Image (cartoon, rainbow, N blue to C red; front, side):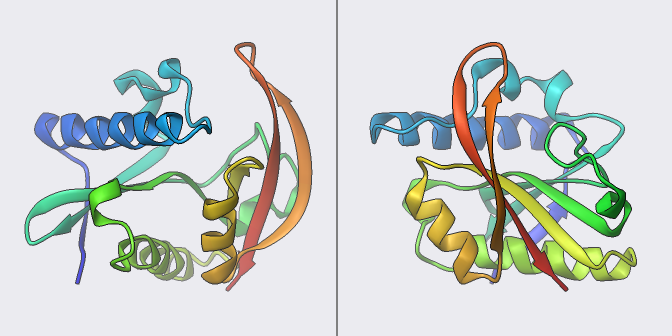
Length: 164
């Protein structure tokens, strides 16, 4: 069972960013793309609006999830106040397939309900077929596709949600 805790200390922040960097490197090694380096800095990840959480397996940090009340980059609409947004959902490659990703999503679902939200939202690059399949397996549905130009690269992105 994964223990999930909100990131509070500088050591936890370091661990969170280290997981993101390792997961991004693994994805690149497998021919896909995940997160530009400028997205993995302390000032970009740890904001007043974000709730970063670490997933711990037997005390070892193995996964991350970053939660927001709003994501105006992808989801600027009237339903936004009803949603909790997920970013930086990741599990270290050595720990994949153990259900930790599902547990991080389940945590987000429960938190959303506690916060009177009625849906979770997440975006995912279309070239991440395994991740899209995982997200659909835990209840997310693709609600749209958008083309993104973030100033560094252009890519196609799936927009997904799960109604709680």
